[in-house]
Length: 436
Image (cartoon, rainbow, N blue to C red):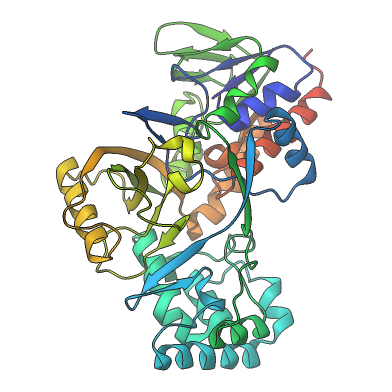
């Protein structure tokens, strides 16, 4: 028997692709994990922005098949708001419109970095010991670092960037060519740079229809089953309701620190390594506005400290079905370190004041819906401890017939597509293994 902990995208994909007996155990009363939506007074919100970006043809084919005719294909309309103006995303190749001295500083800094580093080695990647801060300066130069990369990432990660590694940037941080940066400085747009110039989103409802689309092909799904402990020696899971389940192989999509904490007989070294893994939490503030068309954009980044949020997005521009007719909606993201509790009203007031300051909301706008989702495990922190600890922990788990996958199970920054892919690959590995 194969036990799967978690019915998010990775767990559902593993079950979908398995050809052996399995059982899925999900702690919530619905599937999806963080890939889900909810509705208040006619406004539908996801757990922050969930957009589908496809890089893998097989996964794209699977998802388009599961959601046949239920996805819209859109071209990204994303911006950065800084120095009082909007510039297109990504910042590094779209500086036109900023104050001329800022554009010059960014352009000259990039050219200087380019001449020092060389295009080939600059794009290929970074050394394992290189800090994220050093990588930014080496790759983009002092101007882009000063005016966007450093302030935005320090605001987001809530830590000094010399504490972070640079081994996660390859597909997430757009790395333009020198002609792109020059073109973007003189006003020739660069809309297609980065991993997400095109994305897909459901025509109706919200992103929750993606995990739900797996359900017709899934069996032995057990909801409201929260893990209490796992015995590696006995290969037994105990749940908080007192139920127990045995397994031959275990696929876990629990956050890696939570998984190791649950393993009663894991050695002290492994528990210590897992305890040191860090993450960033996010306050997802969802607002329904009693005014039509508050923005034509999909999402906006805010690198400056004057605004409490690092990003906001507009669900009504993903699908008109997410808002009542004639109204608007938005999600506002504020990152924080777990344990820092801020009163709900203060968070909303700070966000609204920032939105008014940015000119997105008006003083007399009526806010019809105000809601906050506090996402504890939102982003994995890529520090040097993680770089050392995760391979050791994963090797230990594999040696005990446990596969820890998904964004939080693998403890990495991955997309919805990646979670589905990891579930598929893990199932294929297990299909070849004997359960005897």
